[in-house]
Length: 358
Image (tube, rainbow, N blue to C red):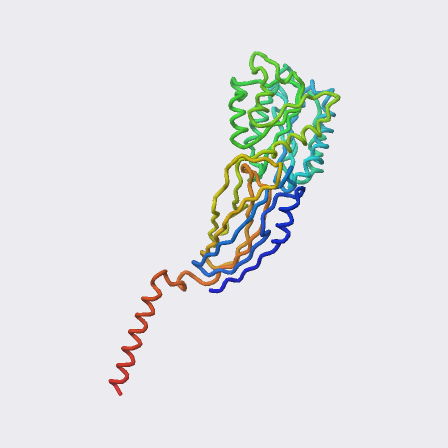
C-alpha cells in the first residue's frame, strides 16, 4: 500500500535548533500517515535540548505555608512572594500552581488544601489570600505531614517537573502516633520526584524533643531543592525562580514517550528508548530517535509524543494516524505466494474440466 505522508514544521524545528534562546523542541512538530492493518512505517524524530533554561517545560509548583500564630509577622510577605513566584515561573513553559497550609494537631485542622493544581492563577491567588496566621500551640508544627501529603497527592500532572515551595518559621514534629518520620517524608518526596524549595527562618532547622536538627535543610538537599533564608533583604521570588531554573541546568537522561492515553489501534515504539549521559545547558544538544508506527486496527488516531529530560516533559508534538483495512484482508507474511499458487492450480483444473466437457 502506498504511504500517504505529511510532515509540518521541519524548517521551524531546524530554526529552533540554531537559536540558543528558543525552547526545547521536537521536529517534525507533527506527523500524519495512512497505514494498512499490519503495516509499519519508521520516521526520525529530532529532539533539541536548548541552551539555557527551557521555555516549553511542564512545571507544577505547590505553595505550602505554615499559617500558625508565629507566622503573623511574615505571613503577608509569604503571600506576596507566592504571587511573584507565579509570574516568574510561568516563563519556563506550561506551569500550574497549587496552594495549601498547615498548622498542628491541636488546631481545627492539621493541613488544608486551599487550591489544587491548576493553570488558573486567579484561583490560586484566591487560595493564597486565605492564609491567616493563628493557632499552633507549641513550637514544632505539622511540616512533615503537609509535605508528605502533598508529595503523594493525585493532582500532579504526569511528566511534570515538580516543586514544593514551603514557607515556614518553625521545625516540624516527627514520628510518634501522629507524624511521619523525616526519612518517610523524604522518601515520599523522592518517590514522586518532588523537589522542595524551603523559604524559611533558621528556626526551621532547630532541634527539639521530637524533631531532627537541620531537618528543613536536609529535606531541601535530599530532594535536590534549596534552603532560602527568609529575611527582609532577600528577593525571595527571584531566588525561587533561579532555584527552579537551576533544576534544569544539568541532566542525565533524554527520552521520547507517549503523552496521555496510548492509541489503541496503533503500536508506537522508539529506538533508542532513551539516551543516558552527563550534560548541561551550556549549548544546544541534539538527540535523534527512530519512531516506528504499526497499524493494528482500522480507525483514526491522534496522540502526543513528548520529549522528557530526567523524566520531566520539556516539549510536545502531535501525530495523526489513519489505519485502513482489517486483519483478515492482510495476508500473512510468506502465505501470499502459496495462496497465488493454489489459485493458479485450481484455475488450470477448471479450464481442463471445461475442455473435457466440451
